[in-house]
Image 1 (cartoon, rainbow, N blue to C red):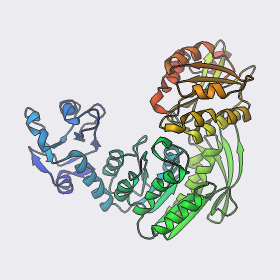
Image 2 (cartoon, rainbow, N blue to C red):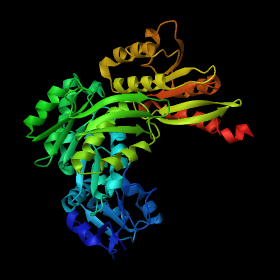
Image 3 (cartoon, rainbow, N blue to C red):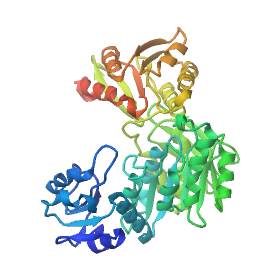
Length: 477
């Protein structure tokens, strides 16, 4: 059996106390009793809303080979006969195991942060580096105080490239996470007004992102966006942190990894870039200039990590946008079809503008419309009315003729839009979903964009549930 961890190594890393007849090892690590696979270890983490100890019996029923539980909860688990490792604090035990995973690997480690594009860049790195060796990367957006150590703990010892997304919505959150990851390469995609309600200005956001430099290994590399207005601040922060190798990407002529040209298409794009002394032509499976810009940074990271650039380009060509992050669907209606672009995972002013630009580049057919379906951007604080109203300008510039809005904060944009734009407003995502189901027409292109907490993913789900995927073969016959 190929164990991820032997039980002996688990006990040593977590300073745990074994109970029962422990298996020789475990095949994986899980904190979700519903998704655990047979032979994995279940870590009973206590979160803000639920306590994993309450689901230990479900984990056992689903095949958990081992439980990691806290000493204080042990009396309540008396009926379970499954082997256990008892620790003082389960989350701290997971952190200790993650650090042990980092200590034992010889992998090249890349950490990604930024206000926009973290998850997409992480997935591009996964695609680009997979032809060059075994890649381990975080699942979904596992980028917080439990997601990062969990991703580390799941990393096989034989990994060649480890890719970690690191997020934050307050200062001092990245510092402990990057201290666990200890990357060889740290990339900051961009600085934008995300979580602006928790910061006074963009420089404070940049300072929080710059904490990533503190965890770089000696001789490590930082990759910074030279086109971003916070570049000089970040460069200074990297220098102050003792980073010896600072690299830049962007369209700026001084960029080391430079975007030379970008051609957008409705389903993909073509970029030309200068990386490592080569001029590259890279077809991208996912459209959007913001995707292309981060792809240049990704190719720079592949170069610095010693990966195969030619194979990395081929990997990017086959990449498709993820669910909630630009994935496209062609859905059948009334003998025709419309296009749904799912950007419902999250939103801030910068990513809203990117989604609007994506909609502008998309091609309706027949008498179809470009429709922006927009919901509230959360965590904007006192800036919320202004940043929502400010979206009127990019909508007008992109010639978006139809806008469907939902949520209390989007009332500010409703009031700011000119009369020439057809506007429908609803108080909630569910009410807007009802409108969207009735109002969408063949030929339309819709982009659905909002912060995750607004529930705009339910609009996407409703459209996918009502309208089947369009098949040209079926409609020809």
